[in-house]
Length: 281
Image 1 (cartoon, rainbow, N blue to C red):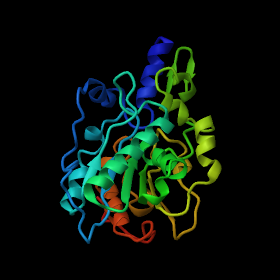
Image 2 (cartoon, helix red, strand yellow):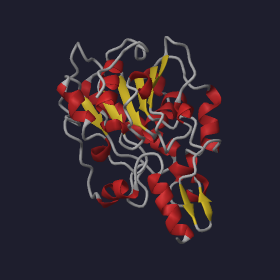
Image 3 (cartoon, helix red, strand yellow):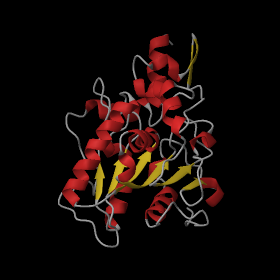
Image 4 (cartoon, one colour):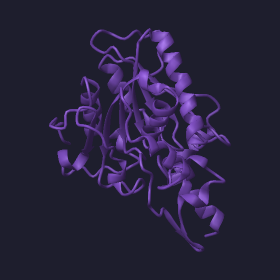
């Protein structure tokens, strides 16, 4: 396999989807919302005062990443919003992560303006679970975010080798020419060094991390966890709750167990209750 082709395959697999999964985002000529999302006339209720913004992962469109969770949350009475971001060469969520965080900030402001809410809850997958931390920590988002729920987030990067090629293993560092977000998410990258230089959390928001031990993309899966006091941070491994759940990285946002964990987390004053037991499959 030629080296360039293997690199493209590797980066397409990185942090959010396969090459097949990335193709719809590249082909989109307009943003298509997932079911239940982006009703700009929605007003939050007293029961659910914070709009929920769904943040997709690398190579993912909001439609592909959130087609199952978005209608679940909307059906529970949340005002649900979602966005595409970081589009380069027609492919979503591949631009520099810091730039994508600024795009998220603009979207948060638009949601707050439309809904009249004081803060938002963010639910993100992979890059989408990590990137908001830059917005929160460096771009003033701490005062606008109530809770960040990360599903398989790349908080400390990935150490994995994704696709072997005839020229040797391909890692994320080979792929910066194609996907700056991929290079940014390699463990030890300059971006992640800056992101984590202020600590895993900042004062204000709550943080919940939902991880699977079968994650083959953000590895080791424990690198996804955040350090912080129990009043602010909860780290959950899906298999500690449902031992027979074999969900992996790409499909984690579609897992009914993950849906139940996210729904629970969003009802809490702080992070998810670590003792909460979802119904297993």
